[in-house]
Image 1 (cartoon, rainbow, N blue to C red):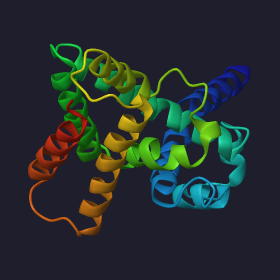
Image 2 (tube, rainbow, N blue to C red):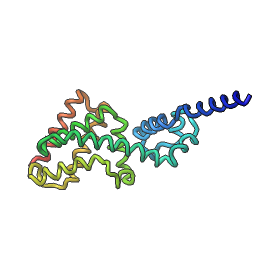
Image 3 (tube, rainbow, N blue to C red):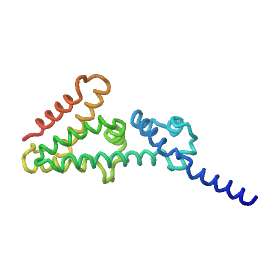
Image 4 (spheres, rainbow, N blue to C red):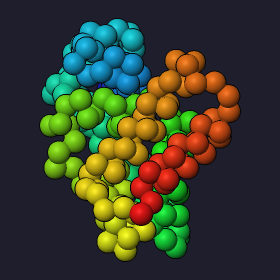
Length: 203
């Protein structure tokens, strides 16, 4: 009898261990909703409803919606930052580096639109979500711009303004493509923005 109870207890414990966590599902649901509607306009109930769990299930993993959003933004920002770093490291000049960075921004959008929107659009609506983070795309792009300005490859201007020009152009282009305002191939849009940005920055 004791052996039977022990086996039942062990089986119950094993079942609890192998029970799938809703954490990943909640992350994916929150990512989609934050990218589409923003963090402020998305509620805990929206996220848990999309997964089909109670709000308590979310609070088992994060103390607040803000903490969940910060985790997602940190992950996506770190991923994009690393991809930008890899894209520019083998380019020989500030101009070719910047071209590679613009191409990678478009590539990231095409491969993962929700994470692109989260980093490029949503996070920057609330500065507290991006300040003091080491993994930021700007930490890769700004040094390239500063080097280009210092060596007079790029015109003399504030690097932050040049960064705004580039990120703004890529972000708006991706929005207009998604809305169907800009048609044609993605490659053509990428090439056009790259050429226009470089032309605007050349000394």
